[in-house]
Length: 71
Image 1 (tube, one colour):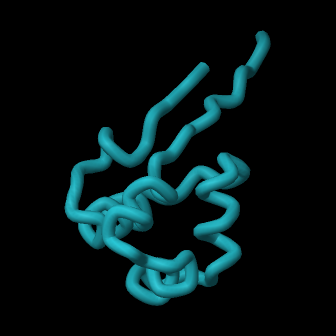
Image 2 (cartoon, helix red, strand yellow):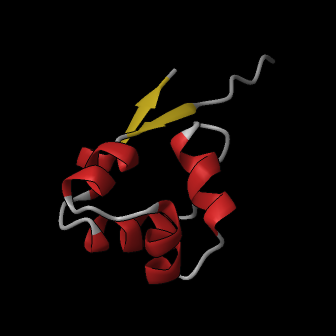
């Protein structure tokens, strides 16, 4: 059996710019470290559903606008 990892692309950077938020400010608003936001933006980390939901709320959009799954 072959297991494929699912890569999640994000539009966090784009939405942060829209609301003039730094990585640090967004991290503070959702309760994580700045490095977590960096890793999310680089596609190196898939967030928990809770974190993804919190990010979408802060960025005033829904999950499927911020996070896109790519096989």
